Length: 134
Length: 134
Image (cartoon, rainbow over all chains, first blue to last red):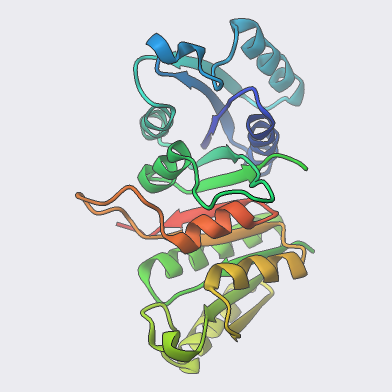
């Protein structure tokens, strides 16, 4: 059974990635590994941090309801989210990584976030980039 | 029937995108629209340019052999490849865009190509980024 690795943050783009990941897992008959990653230390309060294990429990409940085999991991081990995602994808020999991207604002700048860039550049497997719904 | 739009260049990353696009089209029961885009004018000699219509004929023959419904278009209308790709994806209401990324060299820089960034930022649909085989 193939593995799809999803980078999750409790934001519209993270939820979009998760929704899409469920669809892709059903289509490919794969299992999901959902990762929420923090560096830890001072960054633990960053916007991207899941505020509590309770939020990840919600994700687990949602995924339970889909019937897709899954695992939700919170990683706090001093790595950037991109490093965590790519390393774990390598460890499980992922067939696909799914990440969420913020929508560009009307005056939006032309630069992708550094985490998204690193995942795209460093991943061994294909990366599916999904935007938050309008 | 859904439409998958593929950005094609006659390079390892373009061929990887095309191969993956065929797999995805079979999986999703979709048709492919393959685009090779040049700005035209001075840039027509750029590395990314398909040297001749003959090369696109080869792509057509390869796709014919897969049984996947497809269409191969060469666009030379003064737009950047990213603009062409995103605009056409919008026109056909694509479900997915597939692009090829160069592999990072051992001393590779950390910046994605501007065309890849623009497609990722501006596409309305999800974008699958595929790397050339090792």
